[in-house]
Amino acid sequence: MARKLGQHFITDQRLLKRIVKAASLCSDDVVLEIGAGYGSLTELLCNHAGKVIAIEKDPVLVNHLNNIEADNLKIIHADALEVDFPYFNKIVSNLPYQISSPITFKFFKYGFDLAVLMYQYEFAKRISAQANTRDYSRLSVAAQYFADARILFKVPKNVFKPPPAVNSAVVSMRMKKTPRGALDEDFFLDVVRASFAHRRKKLKNSLLANLAINRETLKEVPISLLNRRAETLNLTEFIQLSNTLITA
Ligand code: SAH
Image (cartoon, rainbow, N blue to C red; front, top):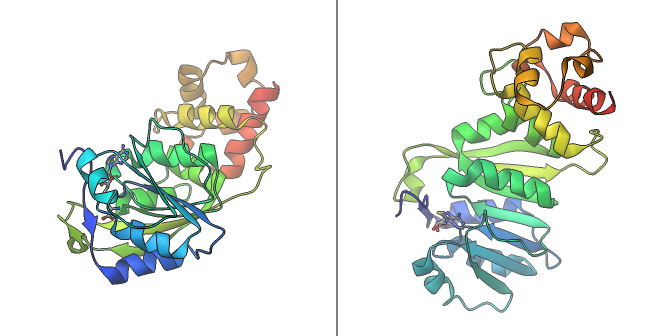
């Protein structure tokens, strides 16, 4: 159970304070927390924000959370990937790592002002990776399209109870305002996904194999670009590519 739910709890008060401080909370803020656990972060958030919405999947932990005395706390017993989120403007969470990717894409769908999130260190590096590096991936392009993301600090395994197998890092993300450049953001994400489906293949082959487009449409894109591999395109080039394909 613990493994499947990624349960690694933080009790270190200094670390908790550092996370909360990074979110610059005030009484106007409505904070979403995914995976509240025993509520050590939750309680601190309640002291600094106007409202806190804590989502937790494990019924045993929800019972613990219900003992927190705070009239600005709403606890939702649900799987964060399945449930609709109520209104929020900030996100602060020590995330369950096994849902890092889908939950991050869900955050982008909803939109937010600021997110302060604990991720697995490798995942945090991928979020902020630049083109032509080993960590550059679909996640890097999507994250940089929607947000200005940076690693705030690394966190060693031993501050968690029980310690996870991997190192961690706290990442801050500020969502970029619209318009962000893509004429159709869902299509842009499809193009990025298709491009990285085979990262060693030429873009031309990846797009034909993984996107519902034909060779005629691809003629609108410069051949020099189509002969490159996904990992060499920067964000601006992916935006241009998706806009060319959608207007072709
Ligand atoms: N915030 C707490 C616990 C972090 S561990 C702390 O820092 O101490 C991750 C938490 O996410 C666990 O409590 C786990 O039960 C919960 N969790 C795992 N998968 C979840 C999901 N899909 N939806 C909501 N909560 C989930």
